[in-house]
Image (cartoon, rainbow, N blue to C red; front, side, top):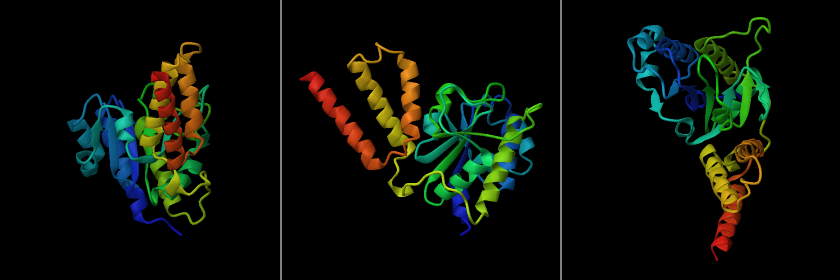
Length: 247
């Protein structure tokens, strides 16, 4: 069954710390041509800006309704599935799939829940901290001898794949669990923050490379497809540990 337009309405395109306002406008144009309208801007250097409006070529409604937020965590509030675009596989990495594969999964999840595709800066892409807030990393199959895509071009490729997945009748599945049971981004990040506090309280982070350990734990739990009840159980365990520490 082909997804309804409501699925496209649940897709967020998130641009992190974009330097050039023209890229924001061109990205808005790329989105609108594929029926995607929800644009989130994390700390843009210059926005709003006349150059963004000019480059949007009629997609100024996407710019007008864009959400400008201070950090990626705020942009991902309420999201069930977050996918980060990365030109390279990281040393510590979650699943790394091509855009076509993940686009099908995004459309499937977007039938009932908000999803997001996250893009980094023009020069350096996503930071490690930003990638760790995504369950999956994705890449575009470009010419290995010249793989340079500017931000707006990358957004266009991704939005095109999402559009094609939208009209597909037999999308592959990444998640095997009932999507309504899965914990969303907010719940998962809340648990990981709670876990970090407890590990610090028992001085475990001091005995290992604390930052690197938390990166690995972020990746571990992001790919575990934790259900809401499972997150609640884990947080209950952490709370009980804290009570025992204070006793």
